[in-house]
Length: 144
Image 1 (cartoon, rainbow, N blue to C red):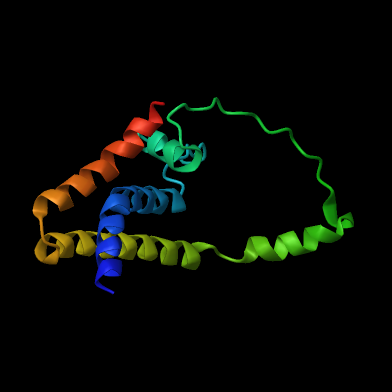
Image 2 (tube, rainbow, N blue to C red):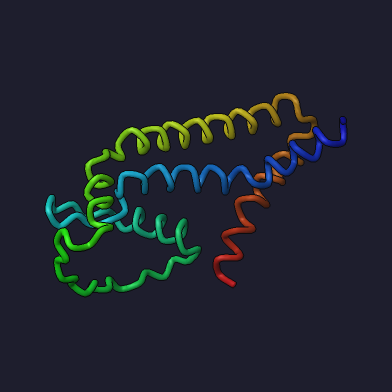
């Protein structure tokens, strides 16, 4: 059991920088803060767009916006349109709020795990080393 706890500690430290990044960037994407909104005039900052691109596509290369072809209105003759209308009436806000709270909880428990590794985990140099590897390895892989 002791070996499992040690394995859990160091795997947690290795992956904690990525967990923090993806939880944070995912929370921002939940409310489309990475997307331009033409109706409100909102233009996201470049760092947010790049963070979302890295989260979704694992690259910093931004794709040019593609224009979607306009679809003809099929009216009520489409049997699936009634289901779409019902789905459109449901508000996604409660689930979005839950996802943001979940992201905050994931970040908080990850930070708590890092604190516990420093406080109760033995050699601080090994803890710092695992955090450094967990931070630098994905950054290096981005440039391969």
